[in-house]
Amino acid sequence: MEVIERRLKFIYGTEEKAASAKQKIEKQLEKYEKTGLKARKLSQADTMLITYGDSIVNGDAPALEVLSEFLDAYVKDAVGNVHLLPMYPYTSDDGFSVVDYKEINPSLGNWGHIGMLAKRYGLMFDAVINHISKSSDWFQKYLECEQPYTDYFITCDPDADYSKVTRPRALPLLTAFQTAEGTKFVWTTFSEDQIDLNFNSPDVLAEVLDLLVMYGRMGAKFIRLDAIGFMWKEAGTTCMHLPQTHELIKLMKDVLSVYSPGTKLITETNVPHKDNISYLGDGKDEADLVYQFPLPPLVMYSLLTGDASILSQWMAGLELPGEDVTFFNFLSSHDGIGVRPTEGILDDAQREFLVKATLEHGGRVSYKDNGDGTKSPYELNINYQDALAGPEDSDETRIGRFLAAETILLSMQGVPGIYIHSLLGSRNDYYGMTVSGIPRRINREQLDYGFLKEQLDGDTNRSRIFKEMIRRLNIRKQEKAFAPQAVQEVLNVDGRVLAVRRIAKEAGESIEAFINVSGETVPIGRYGLSGTNLLNGEEIKDKIVLGPYEAAWIKKQ
Image 1 (cartoon, rainbow, N blue to C red):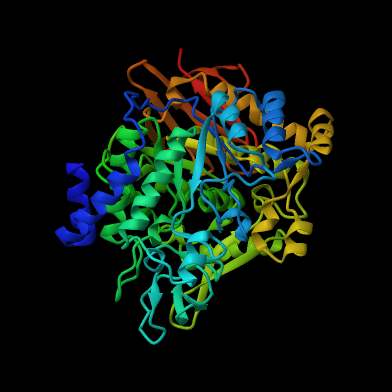
Image 2 (cartoon, rainbow, N blue to C red):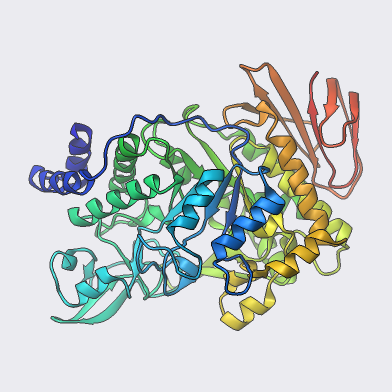
């Protein structure tokens, strides 16, 4: 509590408000007994499957039961963890406008279903705590001007200057609502149905800390802090990555370290790399993992150009502030492919190349408001397999590029996150996007389990991709050189090949990964290159020849 008190003084600026916040936090947390559990280190088995609770459905059966059946039958222990995207009652944004943080959406199941999954997998829960649905009990009480809820949200002067505020979407920042005391304008970063919470209120902070501990106690081995960079608002600033935001995350980690020490925090900040990496703090005091947002567009660029030079250079500059933290690497997710994270890595022409390719491959592009009347690309909305190949490309080329991309992901330092539609070899869902009018739905298809089983058990492209992904995941989880703590060295062999050496120093093991991002055959001759290619069992001595989009994991004997 002494550490908490010090952080609260920094956040709130006055001893009086900090003391009030401390008292409220203590009251919220007094129901939890402190635990003697210790946090475990992440290993090479800690891959993450990213999925909505109802990405796979089977009639009226609770979707979490269907997901559990699919995992038992097909995935088994190829992955160690499952990220359940927001599973709470919601009103919009496919789960990200939460009505009640402590309930499970009835169409998915209940907390019992979560508990059953938690027995077999490490689970990641979403903490969508930057904002909450306008239909939530908290906001409805705000509209009735009930205490303390009048302070749970940010009431704004519509005539004030908000020009410096970072805007992720081309939508109004403020939304007018009728309250018991007349019209009030409230802060809505993402939409009029997603009302930003006011962390300047000690009551809100106490509620959120209680929520995080509850999630940990209910089986969350990871908690994803959604859109967390926007959390603290201050007039005259960008309201992004402010010092109070970092201090709040440190406070969350302090609380979890005592009340749920097995739970790791992961920050979701779709921003340039320097800002993103800042959420790791000094390597011990803030987030345990950060999303590696530049990776999806850079891998896409490499495979579309057949040149891994920019990707290799970027990877060579990656550094972690300590062994206790790592990257959360991913290529595809429920969201699109972020463009902003490439700032300082790709130039405008190279970003425009990605935009053009997305449109030619059937995708859409979402834009952000720059605050000066202009807009710029924010996100590419497209299935990742389709992002890598156009309609004119053959199945062999498209699948080859896709498996090369996923093998890059599996080779890198950090925890790899595999989106369920990547694991299942899905394609653009034009129907879902068109019917909803929501561009992100192009990569959020809901699959019928009976149909999915037919495709996975048959001779289909989906089956081909799925089986190879599972095979590579099972190979990877056995190798200590792929643990997050294992050293990563980028090798310079050929501009068409991404090459990295992973070294598990304590185990004395190393693997050299080579992924050909081009459609050409590339011979690689290296003195001392020897061992077994884990992907095909071939013995290697001094030379390897990679076919188009082929990969090799060479383990030294």
